[in-house]
Image (cartoon, rainbow, N blue to C red):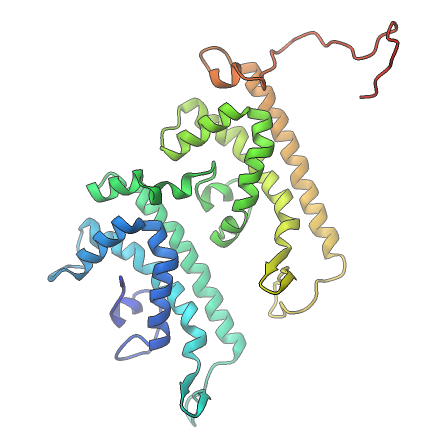
Length: 339
């Protein structure tokens, strides 16, 4: 494990534990490391960091690459692990049953207090995961191990689509910088890339953009195209299509309504008229997306040539500007078509 000592946990989570990490939280730390940290690092970098951490004389506060990476790893690991272990930490199990702590001077926290603490730790922990990924990106050239990560499957997993981070999406649509929302919208974004952007960009230009994003080799023209036209359109499309999709959750025993309230009464049914507000928000996003896509098409048609955006220029998606419009119906037409 990449977090073993109570003092390490206390750097990120306030706790009055005095000897060891509480057992329920220690177990949860191992689960979070396997489910959330290892996929980001990849097995090779994770194994290398573990070896550095376990080595005799390792200075976790030093300036080495391993020490700095460990600090970036332990932040999300400690917060998400503690959040995941809170439920088990609230009770003890022995031969006589399940018990909670209740004495004259101490008692178990109320459920709403536990929930607030868990939510706070999870929000910060997921933000820490974004920080970890960005740290790996920013320092990809600092050591052979990080260079290998950048070109590995783990280093390119978050670059398999045009949006690579929560922060990039947040620039165009407000999701409160939530990594959970960004990840939940992933299937919607990827589907819209293929169905909507491919229709406008053409499959070849879309694949060119994807390849350059994945390999961190964006040309200046393509980066400008992404940030000025493609990202705003894709973000608005994602919100428009994502609102109705994320409003329902496929659970193990059926389909659940998953619309949360701002207050502590999330179990209540949705307020009357909430469906109208959600529909209005989705419709507004789709209207904006349609405008962005028209601007994108107009820009590419005006700009593309044999030397600039050549992939688009030679694709069926390209339409030469200022072409005369061929009328669908004329006075001589024997059959009139409705358009």
